[in-house]
Image 1 (spheres, rainbow, N blue to C red):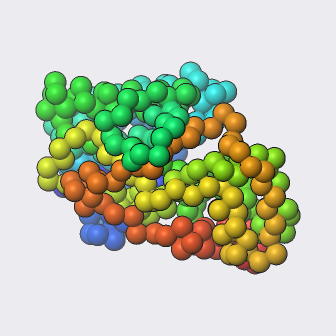
Image 2 (cartoon, rainbow, N blue to C red):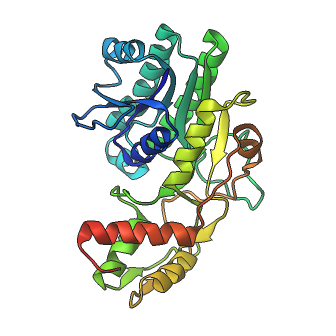
Image 3 (cartoon, rainbow, N blue to C red):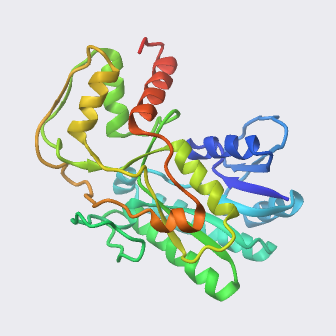
Length: 307
């Protein structure tokens, strides 16, 4: 039996596939782009999520018994300019994955949701999974849709869809637009980074390896008791605090960050990870300093810089 990873060549998908292979699992990496990867235990399949015949054939031919669904349009900012494309990729694409599982008898699906499903939650109390979602972008709406579809497929068809509500992911391989990657690049280039406001804005960074671990654990968890689980790095950090840490890790870098919050960005309280630890066995392992060090080293290698 094997695990199918949609978007296995994506940011999180690559790390997840590596972890699964290291654990001795058979893996099917399902991607829209053509790629050659002949590592033992890995089968790469090119295909679209909407191509149900292709997707169901890949599941059947390779004995897939679990699906981890990471593929989709993965940036909330992009969804503001491309709402229709984002909805099609994330909501319709997720529905196609659930339907392929139903048609082929696969029960366990790990579905990637996001903190963007909640919108702004202005509280200092721990945020549990039963909070009402109030998304502020099309991207967030698609993540709520995926969570709700998972609950419906669980109740109507006996599937075991587990959605992971993941906070701000970072780490080696992060080419997507993000404030953190912009700050790291400026530091490596020796350029001052200026932000007029936003120093008090809180982020809950989570290293990509921790996210991959959470997905791997959720795929094997014996008795999930709820349809959605929080996944974060375990603490909040402001933009100013992040800048101070980067100045330590990038000697000579300079960050000038104004006070206040980032406009048009969601703000949220700390995530409660007790359910993820209880049911999935998930605990974040990567400290922010360790994770940023690895991320800086990766960026430096890609850009030919000296960290």
